[in-house]
Length: 223
Image (cartoon, rainbow, N blue to C red):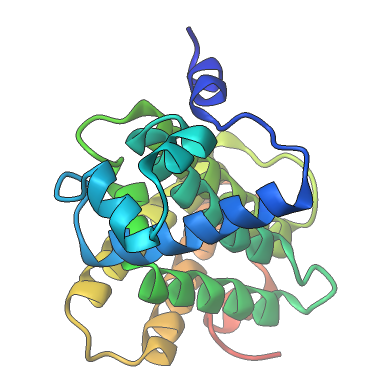
């Protein structure tokens, strides 16, 4: 069974009424709060049902298992992040970068448990959470590449450079939410300047992908 097939089996069955959709969304919102304060292993289905003030069977009805519930919460949480990364295509590249980075950092700041799960791969070795993480990475790489080079495929070296930068963003963001103190705006500026260095290095090794003018002046300079 492929990862996509595994994820399909873990997803809740579609419910046809607006009431069901709203109820499922309410349970996801409750779960996001619970898992932000308590680890996956420390929460039982009885605990979740008690906090949600519903019968345990209702959670099984929508999500089939605690793991299915957990995956639904993570997928719902990252949906807004991926959407935001793809927005702002009409903005100048530097403004779009700052918008994307700011949204990314805000998400990590306000969804710390979900962010840690995504970046670390979830509970133990969880292929489905890793697939979600890979999807977020690809969306971010695509958004940054389009802002830097325009739409279209990029060379393997350029993609690898952007992936290496994004992995450093993940590590810095994890440390930032564990050690608060640095303002979000300062971290955003630092990450933007690091991206400028990456784009210049890509240009040096892959001239077909020239760095944008903003990166040449120093990433983070505003148009």
